[in-house]
Amino acid sequence: MRDNNRLQELYEKFQAGDRLALARIISLVENRSEGFETILHNIFPSTGRAHRVGITGPPGAGKSTLTSHIAKMFRAAGNTIGIIAVDPTSPFTGGAILGDRIRMSDIGLDSGVFIRSMATRGSLGGLAVATNEVGDVLDAFGKNIVIMETVGVGQSELDIVAAAETTIVVLVPESGDGIQTMKAGLMEIADIFVINKADREGASQLAREVEAVLAMRESPGGWTIPVLLTMAVKAEGIKEVVEAIERHKEHLKSSRLLEAKRKDRIRKRIRDIVNQRIESLIWQNEDIKRLVDEYLADSGESPDTPYTLADMVIKRLGIE
Ligand SMILES: Nc1nc2c(ncn2[C@@H]2O[C@H](COP(=O)(O)OP(=O)(O)OP(=O)(O)O)[C@@H](O)[C@H]2O)c(=O)[nH]1
Ligand SMILES: [Mg+2]
Image (cartoon, rainbow, N blue to C red; front, side):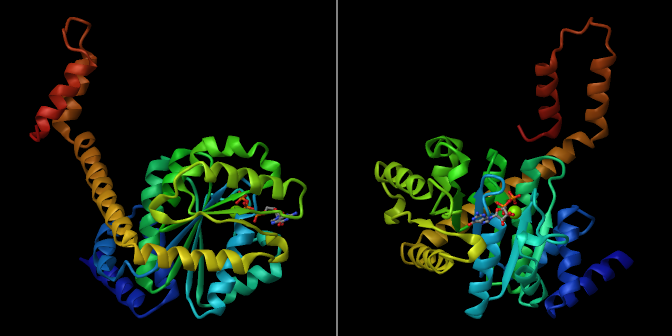
């Protein structure tokens, strides 16, 4: 009961725009602490207003540098921003931030910008769920742009940004063979390509390669994927990226794809919640634990195998 009161109090502070309450609710969700689902349930009706932007690409491509400049420009246009940096190898907060302390501390001090780093804990699949839920929290708090930065190396990390409405794939000349990157699944999720480190040799060549690959594919839903060159450290080319995000948002709206994307995300969310609940229902069930223990204690006489055991477990659940 006392816990319920505490949650209620926290929720009320959150509703009133308290940043500390926002930070605490994000921790609650990230750590799957008791009551996190109640909070997510309560805030859900206030979600769906933020535009979610995913930024991914190889380690060190300049994603955070780019993110901070994009955030700054959106902020200057009167937006409020939430940033989630998932498991960054070069950290967003503390120490040498983005290789540009002054600029980033500007952003960090601005009360209209909220930055949060999330570490990879447990399974990456779980991280994708938690990241999107933290996106909901920022959305419900009233941030109208939510940027999610993740290193694009594995499918699960790609899942994180794929849940965004606009996904930006950042490539750099030194990431080597451009076509190689295409194979890693980045091609499929990009709404906008950014070739960063335009000061380095091979940047325009890479842009041409990406454009050539894109030209061979049909543009999804009538959207022409732009390939933009930036020099994030010098804040060059940022305006074009922000404009492309705005254009993509308008495109999604006018083609009704925005609605479809949101529905897809909710459908996936329901599945994820059910999967998580079923998993804990099964493995915390005493009957099922005993069933498995008994099978393992058997000295090899039993005709059962892990497959027949799985059948039995499912039967116990009574959903088949
Ligand atoms: N030469 C050059 N360096 C850049 C540019 N943009 C970013 N960098 C540098 O690249 C390094 C990595 O930048 P970050 O913004 O931390 O890159 P990131 O992609 O967020 O890195 P991780 O989150 O660790 O994967 C930093 O030293 C930046 O200063 C650019 O346009 N040109
Ligand atoms: Mg980073």
